[in-house]
Length: 340
Image (cartoon, rainbow, N blue to C red; front, side):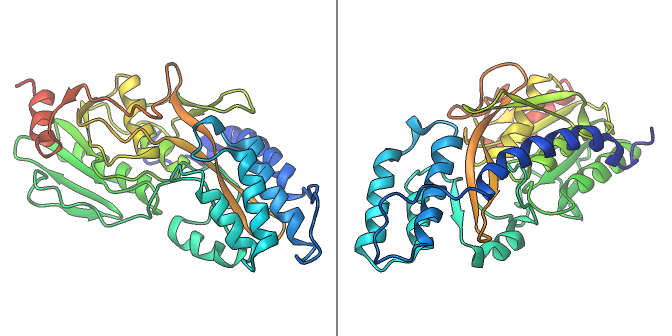
C-alpha cells in the first residue's frame, strides 16, 4: 500500500463496532427522563428530571467515584438543595456539581455553549475523546529544535545537521495534525533523515482518533485499552499504514497530558520509540461526551487509558527510558539515536 493512501478503508470495520458501542451507551442517557424525586413547586417541573439525569450519568458512568473530590451521594443532596433554596439557573447548578468532581476533564456544557466547544475542540458529538485540559495552542518554540523550522499544517518540521529529523506536535486537537505528522515523516525520510525525533513536550492531549492516527504513522496493531467500571476493556488500534521504520525518539515533560501521554506510552510499550525527558502528567482519563435531550452535553471521564497489556498511566504518567531535564531532551535523544 502506498504510504499516503487514505485510511478510511481501515477505519470502517472498527469504526462500525465502536460507533455501535458508543451510541448504545449514549442512548441510555440521551432519552432518559429520570425520577424527579421530591420536586418543589417553586422550581420549574422540567428542571428536576434534567438534574436527576445529570447526576445519574456520573453515578453510573464515571470511572472511579472513590477518587472524586466530593461524595457523589452528598452532591445530589447538596446541589439539589441549591435548586430549592436559590434562584440559580439549572445549568449553573449542574456545572458547579460537575466541577466539584475535580478531575480537570469532566464537565457539563449547557446547550447554549455547545457551539463554542465545537469551535475549540472540533465537532465531536457523542463520540470518544481523550480530552485536553486546555484548548489547542500554538506550537512551542523549543530552544533545542533545529534552526530552520517550518510548518506542515499544525505540525513543525525540521532537521539537524547530523541528519536527525524533527517533528513538533503541539496538540492532538486541531484538524490536520495526523496528516501533518505523516507528511513530515515522509518528507524527512525522502530527504535523507537517519532517525526521527517526535517532540510532544507541552502537548495537552486531544482527540482519541488523532492519537490513533499519529501512532499509525510509526507502528500498527492494537496498542491501547480503556478501563471502566461499567464495561469490558475496549481495545483501540493504531490507524493507517506505517510510513517509516526509522529509529524514533519521543520527547516528553510534565506538561504532556491525556492522549499525548497515550501516544508516547504506546510507542514505548511497543518498543517502537525511546522516550526522553521527564515523566508525563499521569492524566489519561477517557472522556466521552453524552448528548442530552435539551442539547446540552455532559463530558464524563468514563474510564482511563492503558496500554494493551499493563497498568494505566493514570496517576503515574509515562516514565522516560532516558530521564533528563526536558530542555536537554533533544540533544540526549539525538545522541541515543545515533549511538553516540
